[in-house]
Image (cartoon, rainbow, N blue to C red; front, side, top):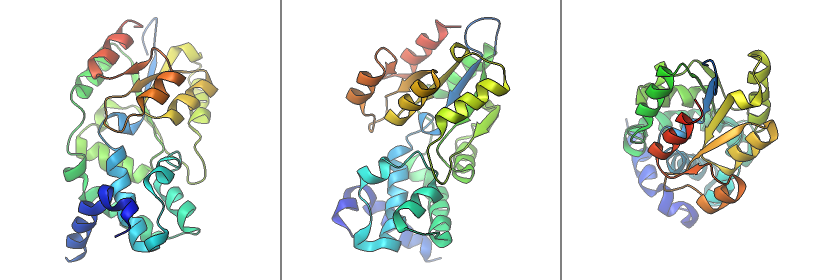
Length: 239
């Protein structure tokens, strides 16, 4: 095992081996979510990438930080970026492990998230997901977490680039919305930067262990939340 991935992926790799053997009148109208906000998906996603890259790249596998910096692309895009070519077998392996390891590494939504979604729906806020993930992995997670019913529309990741800012602009154009009528909930530096480019407010979910709080507070002061309850109170004040 590559030492760079040993801590993050050892148990996932052992598991893989076992598998192989067998809107309202005023305020916000739209609230948009990144899939990782719903559950602890970043470390889990890195584990699965670790399994795939160890299998297909060996000692040349990228480290955790390199993978994290390319999360704006969807999973096939990340795999192609690092392997240098299309590798459908590796992509299918990722999807397979993403499904098989979900119960172990991302078994349920963060506490309070379902309550927040139900609160927003009760206020007439239209909810959608804008994610860097592929449609395949997004659907796997939403189905596993039993959360599909909360969302009205979906924008998925691209294999070549992170285009969340473009997707946010597209949502505003298609729905004749101003930037102050929507908000995005994300958990990464790239989410804040995409929102700033589109002039959209970004509420940052910083309650996961992987949250880069210092960087996020520097970029997005006053809108970084360490609990779901604090975020819900902040959003409620805008409705």
